[in-house]
Image (cartoon, rainbow over all chains, first blue to last red; front, side, top):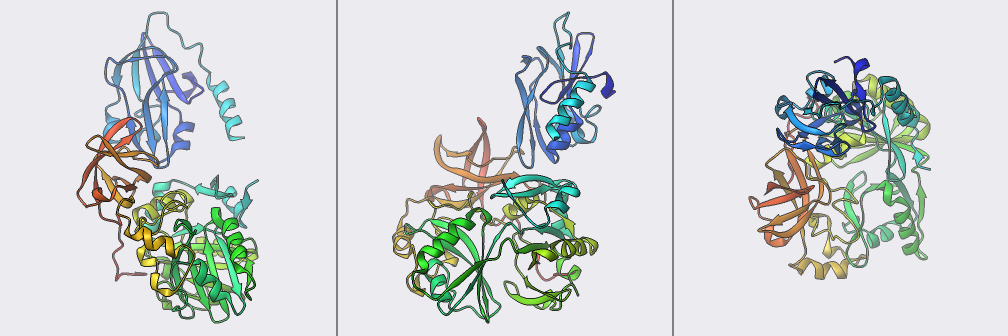
Length: 128
Length: 363
């Protein structure tokens, strides 16, 4: 995935919409903050997710964080490779480290999410 | 505002992620907790521990004051010896865990950063009319730990006195680049190594020399996972004003027969009390880490609470320390830990989780 074409949530997830399937992952900034990812808990296939609600958790040596879905729909796929190798999330956050795919309703857009430009401004202010 | 060690600028300029700890701005990590942890287990890591409180005692009655507030016996210490012990309140709860140093010319005590003011005040309160001068040297000095199997080799020739001539838990005054310092064969990682106390003005040159010699800078994140594997208690987690040394498994650091000390009468009773929870180790079946506060259950009943937990970088398992009912402390006892609402299977294991192989020091 090209970070330039992705959309971003305040909570550091990225989203990419192709047809009615939205792929969701964590941004490089988020995984750099977490470092040392040791465990990820993802939902099951067909589980419903709600926009803005937690769909799982990611754990690093130091702390646990919730994962939030930027869109509503049903889980159509989870990245099963992460179960055995959660470090894929840090080594390739926009590629092999994707988290889930969500089947969304027709007409769903990502317009409510930030562009890369807007997201970079947000993280710049977080880093101060 | 949080205090800064003499190495603050170095940390901030070298990717140290700074967090507040015990009233100080400290680096939690530079690169990755796991990498830093492994460096200490396999080679040598470097820690800025200047936040620890360093108190110096002079005067004819220094020993008497230390004996009154300290659970271990300082009177049997030889010059250059270092001894771990507790400072208890009059109920037998732990005010702090400390190292006491005996010098030919006086005494020193290293206390936890978060407890420094409390202990300084406690000492002042119990000093009464004794002839003791206590100097808090925390901000005029620095303290740097070099830890790991290569620590001693790496420190060869660093100071006038050689670290590998020091016995474990011994220290000596010596010189670094002509100026006075102390090296101490102690640490908080479960590895061999030394801790160096020098003037604050020498902190950066000493630190940079150790980096050049090959020690990897490590933050408090790795310090925490390392001490947890070695099952060393951390004040505010395993130790508090409400927990006594027997519960904490530190009876070896309490000398009931040394004479009176603060908390001794209460400890006499608490030692017999079979209802008090005890510190144990837990190994979890899954990879979700139990964290501080997670309830420990057995047959649907809460038997205790986790005080520290992580997934350990060396053993690659979820481990935790917890306080549980005395009936549930046997190794092999099966229980569950409520990790954020989900029950995770666990069993009681012996402490420490990690013990270094001895006999290949400094190899």
